[in-house]
Amino acid sequence: MYPLMDMLTLGGSEYLRYIGRKTKYILSTDHPRSADGLWKMLAGSYDWDDLYTNMEEGDKACLHTLLEMFGFLMPDELTPEIIEFEKRHTWVFRHPNGGVFIPLELLKIFMRLPSFQKDFWLFTLLYKLRLKEQKNLASLISRDFEAQISISLEQNDLDMALVLYIYLGHQMRYDSLSFPPRGNKAKLHYLYRLPEHFDYAPVYLPDHPVVLWDYLKEVFPRYHQDIDNLYNHLRETAISFYRAVGVVLDPTHPILLAFQSGILIPLIPKGVYPDRIHALKVVAPKEAQKHVQCN
Image 1 (cartoon, helix red, strand yellow):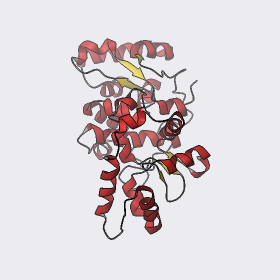
Image 2 (tube, rainbow, N blue to C red):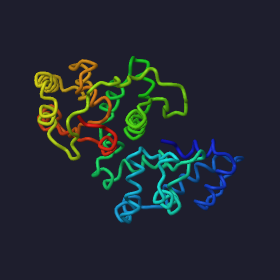
Image 3 (tube, rainbow, N blue to C red):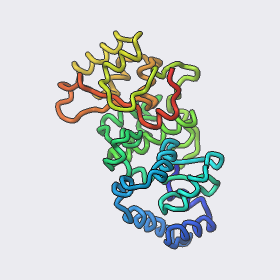
């Protein structure tokens, strides 16, 4: 999970020459603004929805492999197909320290594309949450109010979705929260970590939307009363879904942990929310299906 702009700063002159050869856009360490021009050029060079829809199956498989690993493959994870994929596309890059990555800036474009949304990637599901829900998810993974403020600075759903994606993605892939999105390498002690050896994963993850309440009662049969309490609380208060999860369920409750970790994402309809509680659906992001071991 790397922004291209950070890599241009950290990579040095040799890396800038690699980017120049790849993109045909000349960069200079003396003119930092040229990096902004590079990204604008790349972002405007394609009809991204059309590019993805018409991508050859081999290239689409490589892209899916990268996205399942949250946009970055370590050197020992590279395959000949991924190496050739990087060479063919101006928007996929080598990392200065090895490996291949898709810039985080590009994921902000992918979030809004219908062709990506229909595949239920984590970044698209987080983007489709309303800003209020996003901020309450941020609260759910924060240990205190100061932490909640720290990760809720963004004022639009696009940027907030990217922040949540970085936090949840690093925990899902690395069991680590040591890479915050603003470049600070300090450990994120102020965020909740999922308990080690805690059995919170359901027996299966839905790869397509299913009715939330039916699914929870099927895979968490011991917690029917808690599920009913959550449903009734939402009906009576009409508060945010993630807010209700944090209020009704104990911090170590397996249902809370499943939503807190991002392995389950609710699909919350727009409109008269309280009248549609019964119709709420849930899905597991494709990334969770790759990384989470079900019981």
